[in-house]
Image 1: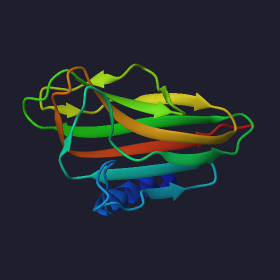
Image 2 (image 1 turned 30 degrees about the horizontal axis):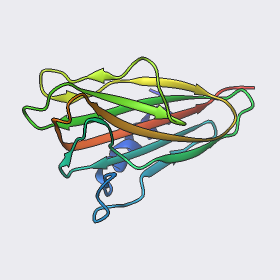
Image 3 (image 1 turned 45 degrees about the horizontal axis):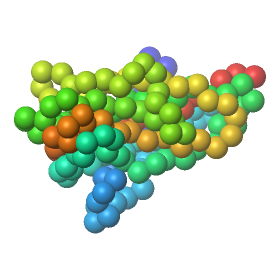
Amino acid sequence: MRLGALTLVTALSVFVARGSFGAGDEQSKSEPARWHTRSSLVISASGDHSMNLIAGYTAIDHPHTFACKSSSGCLISFAPSIQLVEGSAFLWACGFVDGAQAKPKCATYDDDNVLSPRQHALVGQGEHTLQTMVYSEYGAGIVSEWETDYTIYELGN
């Protein structure tokens, strides 16, 4: 394992232990953790409070902005993990960049009521906004806790 990969794993462990916040919870709001190297950036955020879902999209975290400096663009990897309360139904986790859904399409939960998809997006040079949302078809659902990582890789010129 390369030193950079070991540093990333260690940094992500520290990020999860650091404060948490949710999109609708101003009481527990804190800044998301960021880890940056010469060609990559990790933004990690989490929350451990209940959140009622509405029909349609509910923001899990606040929007995060970053600047892609490479003239070749950036690759963004979305990796959320969202725990649902038993009985939540017809829900999908979705990563968004600049208001558009990442690929592949939103993912639904597993047998343990956990939404844990992986998605990606390619963006051009410039400022961009990232956010994780849960889509509820009927507005029936409760998120009990969550964690999401956005890893941004600057592509070579």
